[in-house]
Length: 296
Image 1 (cartoon, helix red, strand yellow):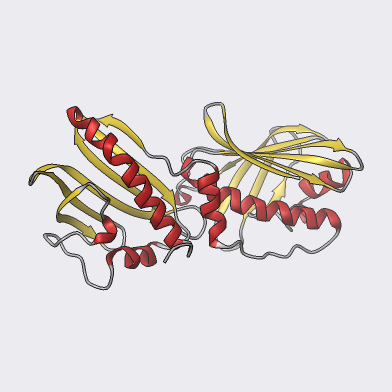
Image 2: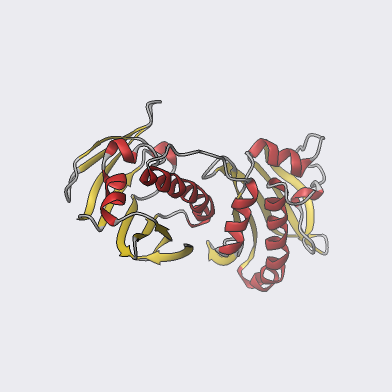
């Protein structure tokens, strides 16, 4: 049995994933809490673990990246939760929480895994990654060596759609109305840039390549370019500048880039952004599907 949902815990995004395992609670508990077993399936190697509430956890990938954690819940053999404080270069804002809950279920058990975090657009890649890890946990509980097959890029796009992560938003900031659509992509920034910009170089003052446009939004000239991370241009209404459109590609979760598209307008023109929002959602979804190889 598998069941995944994106919910909230204490106002923060949270993935909740259920898996039925064909082993008693005690056997799975050992795979969750004994470092030599935990390190065979958990995505970040555990260097040390003090298994008590308030006990420290040290994560170390052996390549220079370390994280500190703290055990925040412990009820053997049913509940184990800990925080992860990521280093600044990983780009996380707050401590993530990982919680594992086990309940007997017939001749096996039900595992409920919850990951609490702040980066909601990253939920799709978290879900794909955790599905792989929980599959490896099943193998460890079985007494087998996990097989780490890379998930197909399409899995990311399926998760984005399943969790409704393609929806944009319109807010007000500094007297402007601001439309934003974000999406985690399956390819790195340089590959996505080439896909959007085509073969020619893009320079300030040039015509905006079709890849960076949306239906119904009149594009003025390019105003700023930082290959392969940023392209900004004016959008116009009847030839007059009405605001700006900004495409940004930054490091995301997983192996691909994070795409953020922003369109701004005067606060009084919020309705124009509302009209444009479906087109931007469709455009960004098309970029995601092309990056995943689902569309030409």
